[in-house]
Length: 294
Image 1 (cartoon, rainbow, N blue to C red):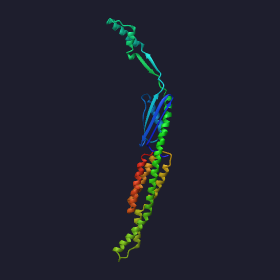
Image 2 (cartoon, rainbow, N blue to C red):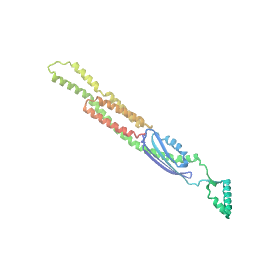
Image 3 (cartoon, helix red, strand yellow):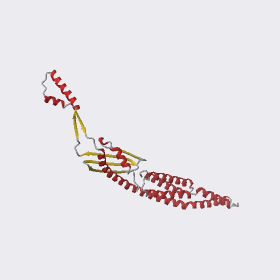
Image 4 (cartoon, rainbow, N blue to C red):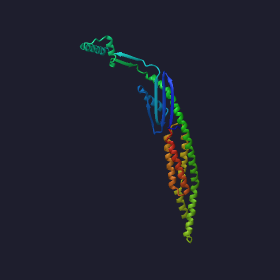
């Protein structure tokens, strides 16, 4: 199935008490490039996300956004730095004594609570494997939607490329039909000029045939049209493949353009030249389309 490199997919679900949202979007690129944005505490997900998406997507610049909302309260432990608290307490008592202040125990406690460094907050370490398994469920659905859009776009590109390939074949057929006629017309023009300027002179017919043969060899495009037809047949096969064939088609289109240029350089006929221009225009449009094929 031909896929475009342009796509978008989004999925949201609650898994293991986590509300997870994953959004994917991509544009065309020569290779696979992946950028992700995940919450600060979930940086370990980035490489896992890249590997998972790359297992199903081979080309394109992909951007992935992940949002995770934990619906359960985090388990938090608070530890007290007793030695530091005692130091603060002694310092407060010493200061109160010097200033001859009446410092009660509740006042000391109230003062100690202002010093944040006395209390150390510990959050339980997240279970990375559990979180990844939950995120993977949502990512899988988002990637499926993402690929579906790519395939829909790919079908439209495939249809357009095939229509243009048919147009090229029509032009190739016209060139094949026209090419022998140019040789006959050259022979007729050559005889007409000879009769015009050398009407009283005996002309060697063998020499005329030799000149026509040289001209026919110079303008012959049979090899190029055969190769061009072969390239189009291969193009059809690539477009029916289930593999990522964007690069292969890109190379094939370069070869098609080379054959068209060769036909154009040999053309000494207006009709053939016009057909070559039409062929090159269609090839260029195909080239533009395949830049977005995975």
